[in-house]
Every structure is written in structure tokens, then in C-alpha cells.
Image 1 (cartoon, rainbow, N blue to C red):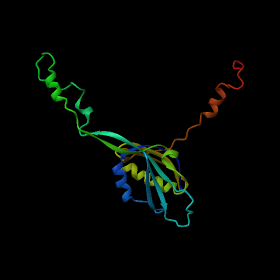
Image 2: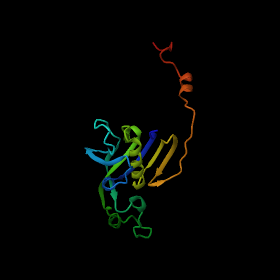
Image 3: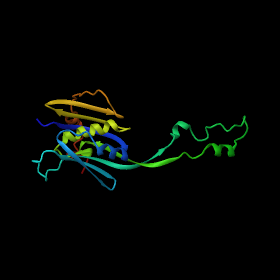
Image 4: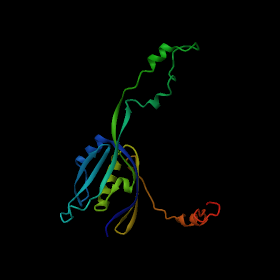
Length: 200
């Protein structure tokens, strides 16, 4: 039986430079020979290259898709420094010392850093079915090096359902809960707009 990914949700973020470093020498599953990385404007696409030569070149293999965004990174977290003006002005109960305050509120050095954001559900982040599970394993490795974000998924491996949860680079225990789908119930109780006598 082919392993499949049924549910997946990702909010992973990592610096684009780190993403490129990771894919330079990734630990790939045996089904994948290599990965191709393409950047189209603000989208990063990582496609699987199949080890199996018998796979048709017209069969689209699984790919990971990330949006590329710019985030301002501060040398020192401005939130930890307290609100503006919270620093002591050195005056003992007198009026505001504006000159002193301006000196203490120096601008914090920052730079714009590009981030690869693997965000969304399965259809957005993990596309195409050929080598889908193998590329999901690659995404799990990305999740372990990502400094921020969560990856949750339900996959079928050898006919057994498995739950995956990786938060801020660390694996966490996960379980699968089966719940009743409320869709049928709400349809019965909802308003039938087509046959409503008050709507002409």
C-alpha cells in the first residue's frame, strides 16, 4: 500500500538562506534522488526528483511550496526594552527631560530578512500525488530546523494512521480523534432558501 498524507496544516517559517542551506544537502527518503528548487517572484517551489527511472517524465512529482516574505529583524528585541519613554530620564520628580529622553531612545539596528513561509493546508504546501509521502517526510525535516511555526498532519503508513505534530522545531506527541461530522445535522436545521415563501 502506498503511504498517503490525508490532512496537513503548516505555519512554518524559516529564513530563506537557511532553507537554501537545508536543501543543499538534505537527508532524502530513498524514493527521492534529488530536489529541484525554483523561485518564481515571491514563491519558492521545491520539487522531488524520482529515483525510479520508470516514472514517466510527464508525471508531476510532489512539490513543496512556500511564499517568500520580508521580515524586519532587530538586533535586540524592541518588546524586551519596554515601551517608548519607559526608560528613566534621570530627573528626580521634575518635568520631562526631553533632551535626555531622545538620547536614550536611540534607533535599534535592524535589517530586512527574507523568509520562506510554508503556510497553509495540504493542497497549498504539498502538491501532486507522486512521491507525496516522501516529500512529506522532507517537510517534516524542514519543520525540525524551522525556528518558528507548527506542522500537524495525519498520514497513512502501511495501512496504519499516524499523527504528526512538530512545534517550533520540536516533535510533540499527537493523537487522532474521530469526531462526528456535523454537516448533515446543520443542513436539516438550516433555512432552505430556495423554498422559502418569504423570498420572491
